[in-house]
Amino acid sequence: MSVAASETRAPAFDMPAVPTFGEAVKVWARIGLLSFGGPAGQIALMHKELVEERRWIGEQRFLHALNYCMLLPGPEAQQLAIYIGWLLHRTKGGLVAGILFVVPGALVMLTLSILYALYGNAPLVESLFFGVKAAVLAVVVEAVIRIGRRALKNRLMVSIALCAFLAIYGLNMPFPIIILLAGLTGWIGSRFAPDLFSGTAHGKGEVPDLKGAVDLMFERGELAHTIPAKWHAPRSILVWLPIWLGPVLLVWAITGSTSVWTQIGGFFSLMAVVTFGGAYAVLAYVAQAAVGSFGWLAPGEMVDGLGLAETTPGPLILVLQFVGFIAAFRHAGSLSQLLAGSLGALLTLWATFVPCFFWIFLGAPYIEALRGNKALSAALGAITAAVVGVIMNLALWFALHVIFHEVRKMGFGMDVPVLSSIDWRAALLSCAAMIAILKLKIGMLPTLAGAALAGVLLLAASG
Image (cartoon, rainbow, N blue to C red; front, top):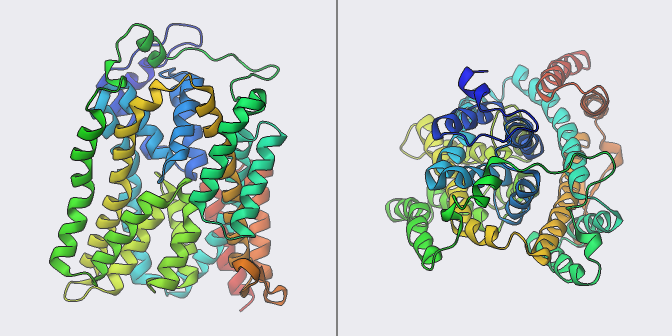
């Protein structure tokens, strides 16, 4: 760790220091390089770095921002970074935090996508991905547990999570409706049973919330940019909508409405609006569209892409970059396949991540103004609980498609495995990965590497 970074850390009970912009850039770069493990791991890393060690932001304000980001479409971990960067250093702080959170992983993901497209059909590469896919299931299960521990504070929240799971798996209910119903439940419930929906009470032995640098800046009246100005919303819309949609419309005008470029830009711009709950919640829907509607990928390749994304820093939703790369790579037209794939990846990144800045810069001042509103906090807490249920559905979806060769549709579109099609090798690797991550506390990257090697050996031994 650099001297400059260590100097920003504050002892547990001293007054926290306000970081300079340069110090913040170094810390955001560090987080971007180390943010492995999907949204659960990334949020935990930011909490450790920004709340526990540096005390740039207090616990309750951190959770308030997290709940708002959970409510938004898109990657909540990156949005949380933008939010905290904006609190500390206005728009430039949010831009730097959000960009540095994504760029390291995007560069790695582009490299891995190229290797996959060129050599993915090689037997050795297929064997490696066989093991990685089995281990990814353990990572998703761990995400359910981690987020569940934070969000499911009582039996009511557990019930909301279970209802969300049954709604999306058993009834095939659209995710936005689930989010809306959860939010209404929290909003109304706060009026009749506020204690059940409150997330501010501390349990026995917990350390009370300490004020961070942001909280003290608020008390001193130094954060005027967090107060929504009269023309804040229209100005934000006029600035950020053209930045976001301008390149997408330009691609449509140049290549036509049926080109793969227009499909990529339009589809992922739509995803940026309707995909709530972050990467884990959106993957099943994206997989269905990319495989079934557009025919960009084969079913197993989507899980391969998630395995790649799990090995890179940055948001797990970088798997969409892989999808955009493969789609353009296979529909390159007159361009070279690598150039087409790289442009497809860049367009996917733009359509996926630029809206995150729009949502935060537009809404954050109003969310800060409503921070003391108990009904809103209750609604956000209920939504977070519902997201746990959606991630449970994704874990089940992965389990079915990794461990079984054949899955059939039942009533309401439920996926049910054909038990005779079980792949004992994938089941064995998944169980071993779960023991490694959940019981032995082995890190994600060593587990993925070990599973990849074990996959090669298992497939070689079984012919």
